[in-house]
Image 1: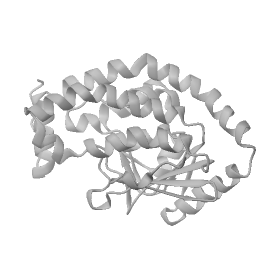
Image 2: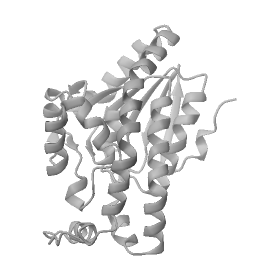
Image 3: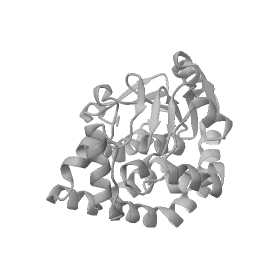
Length: 269
């Protein structure tokens, strides 16, 4: 039975010739990931994994941005509210579910980072199997800049790709780099001009689609055992720390300052 992709409101899935294109589809909001989009990203991987007409997945963002990460306006509005408390209690399980589902997808996932990928947006790209980035895209995990622990996967995957020392520096500073630097550091597989990102991703998707499916899928799953081990080791602690920081006054101040376009003033609590 073919999954019903029309039920998704904030993401879009198109299929053609064994290749599915999964698009973060909120370009007017720079594909920022709010709770509703997050919920769709938890479940769409199950649909894609079960879709017998899909051999390869290309993952991208609508418009000029891959994803700006978390929705900072939503962060500011829910601070200290019942919605905020519920969010902090629900998020650890929701985050674990999303990344577990990504790692369980047997089909290869090619991430076409067509523009800026920040925070959770960058983490989603790094959890994909292959990442192709626009050379001018801004890339990085800026959780600390809004008073948050880099807990929703950043602490898991960055050390695997660049080593603990570099990972800690990038995550603690919240530093953003361009696509060329991300490639030089080994964070992503390929860097190309922005107008060539989708073309390059689709070319690789067609190549993988022509290979023996079981050989490709089980090779991927073998390597993912390592990623799953790291996630099981780290994610529960890192996301718990992030949920503690999401209730801090420094986080609220950072979110307000971002919206008001002013420097934040942090108190350390």
